Image (tube, rainbow, N blue to C red):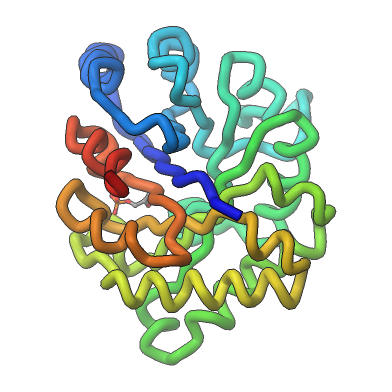
Length: 249
Ligand code: G3P
C-alpha cells in the first residue's frame, strides 16, 4: 500500500496574532502537491484564528491536551475543547513534554486514548536523548515509549495515529539525523509495530522524522523507504515550510 506523505508544523510556544496572519497568508498562497497531508500545530490561543484562516486542505493541531473532558483542572485544555475550536489533530508525547515538563509514557498513553475518543487524530512523538543513543539504547527507549501506547489502544486506533520519530539531540540543534540514521530507526519502529501490533499496522502507519528539518535537508531523507514525512519545528515558522511540504516533488 502507499502511505500518504505527511508533513506537520509544530510552532511550539511561538507566534503573535500579527506574525501568524502573515505566515498563514504565505502558506495559503503556496503551491503544494495535492498528495501530501499537512497539519499545523499551534499554541492553544491561536487555534481558532488558524482554523478560520488557514487553507482548507491543511488541518490544525493542538500541541498537547489533558485526559479529562472538563472539570476542575486549572490551566488544562481537554481534547474535546481542541475539537470544539477547530483542531483535527493533537501532538502528544513531544520530547519537550516528556523531558522539560516531565510527562511519563503512561500519562502520554492516557492522553492518546482520550484524544482518540474525542475524535482527534494523534501525532505520537518518540525519541531518544543523546546519552541514550551513545549508550546504544535508542531502540529500547523508543520501543518502551511506543509500548505504553500499544498496550493502551486497540489495533483499529492506529489508523488515526502518525508516529513522529524525533531524536532529542536533533531538536532545535541544527544537528539533523542523517537520512540513514532516520531510515534505520524508522525501519526498526516498523518492525516493532509488526511484532507488537500487527503487519497491517506496521505497513499502514506513517512514521515521520523530526529534528532540525529544513527546506534543504528534507529532500534526501524524504526518499528513504520508511520515512513517510516530517514534523517540523523552527522551519514551520518560515516560508521554507512550503519546500518541506513539497519534499517529494
Ligand atoms: O516537533 C518538531 C520538533 O521538535 C523539531 O524541532 O526546530 O528541530 O525542527 P526543530
